Length: 97
Image (tube, rainbow, N blue to C red; front, side):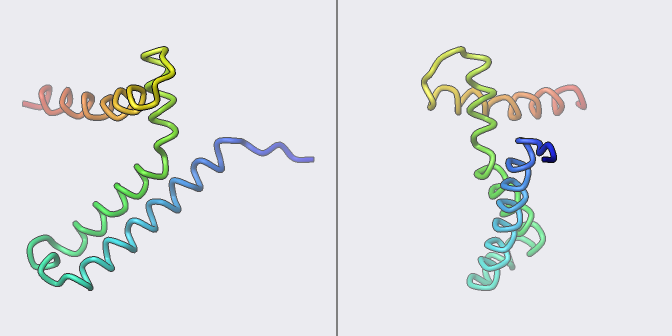
C-alpha cells in the first residue's frame, strides 16, 4: 500500500476553494456589470480566488493560532492565525518604505 501524504487533501481543498472562488468572482462580474466597470474582471476573479482559498484553509489558521496561544478557544485561535499574515504584510510594507 502506497503512502499518502495527509497534507495532500488539505492542498486539494485549498485549490478547489480557489477555483470555486474564482468562478464565483467571474459570475459576480457577469451578474453585476457595474462591478466589472468599477474594478477589472481579473481583479474580481483574483479576489474571489483568494477569499475562496482562505475559506477553504481556515483549519490551518486555527492550528497556527492554537500553536501561538496554547488555548482551546477557536475564535481566539482563528483571530491570531489570521493576524499572522496581516502582520507579515504590514512588516513588509514598513520595510519597503
